[in-house]
Amino acid sequence: MGRYSRLREIRRMDPERDFEQIFRWITQYEFPWDYAQGVSIAFLRDYAVPRISQLLDRTQEFERVGQKRYDDTVLFGYEMAVEGFDSERGRAAARHLNRIHAKYRIHMDDYRYVLATTVVGPKRWIDRFGWRPLCANEHQALALVGHKMAAMMGIEGAPRTMAGFEKLLDDYEAEMFAYDPANHRVANATFRVMAAWYPAALRPAIARFSLALLDEPLLHALGFPQQPAWLRTLAERTLRARSLFIRLTPARPESRPGLTAPRSYPFGYTLDDLGPAWAQHRPLTPLPGEDAS
Image 1 (tube, rainbow, N blue to C red):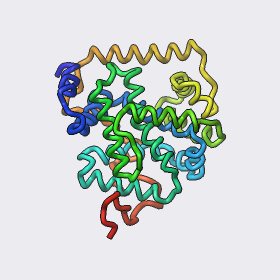
Image 2: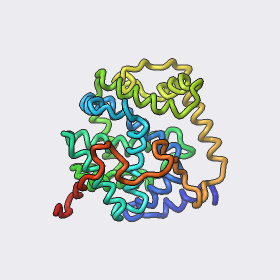
Image 3: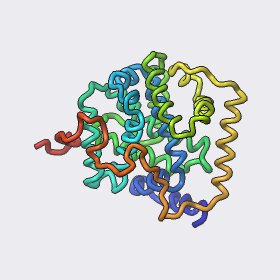
Image 4: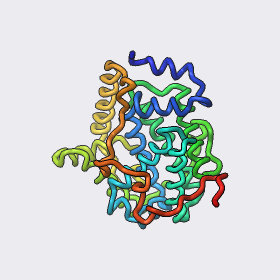
């Protein structure tokens, strides 16, 4: 398969009808590593909003079981999408996720923003550092996945277009980004999780490399210093060199999806394993429009 074969096919597809297939190709074949980096950035942007970080700080999930909290967030998205959002597996994952969220008082604006970070974060990372930018159909597919997840989670007012999600994110951040000690604590706990993926000797350098890729408003809200210009340049050039190398390699074959094994579940998991311990073995929360009986 040629490096651009899937792109040519995606451009012929209808994202309104084929958004789930396009999403699968983006996340598992075209940009699996880049998509994961975009999701990681999305986590950090969530923490820059004090109302969100204070809730996360109170739960102590990232402090106590940070790797599991990270894995569970990624796996919920995978479980909802892997067999189709309208499959029983996808709907069961959404019910379980809704059951967890139902315990907390979360503003609808915050729900919309967190959803927007998971749509816009990967899009902006891939367009900046991927081996090619996303095409219009891929942008629309990511937006429609976000809209579908909003419908399944009862999140009102979610956009249907990438432009809508980007405006939602940018407007919300302009109003809500602010430093709070909780922001820094939760971000620090997340950086510790990410740093643990690498040998101990490399962790300080990896941490500084990661900070060099973050924009100034985000760094300020998280309580981290801006990195020197030489390091920001080095980080960007390193990732762009990687993208050039990937562009010259063959496309990932259909038999080898780019799925990273979750570190918290070396022997596999069930849906009920995902989320905090208190949420296990409890009745599922019906999806919007489902009969609660």
